[in-house]
Length: 77
Image (cartoon, rainbow, N blue to C red; front, top):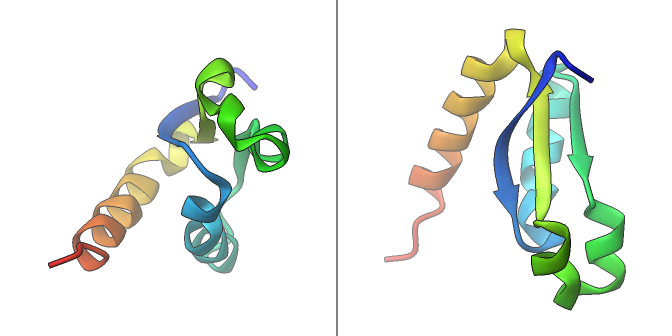
């Protein structure tokens, strides 16, 4: 776990669905902390600190690029 680093924090489980698919297709290992807890009780997202996406330090730059691409492609005009 020491080699995994938090790269993003999300408030709701639906925010990570597309990202999970992309990471799995690219073979990138990741952890989503608190995903099930917040899925059961969405109002507890503040108490648990949100859904934390953790990736291996070797994959950090690749995942950051994926997140940047997602953010730029999913903007609402």
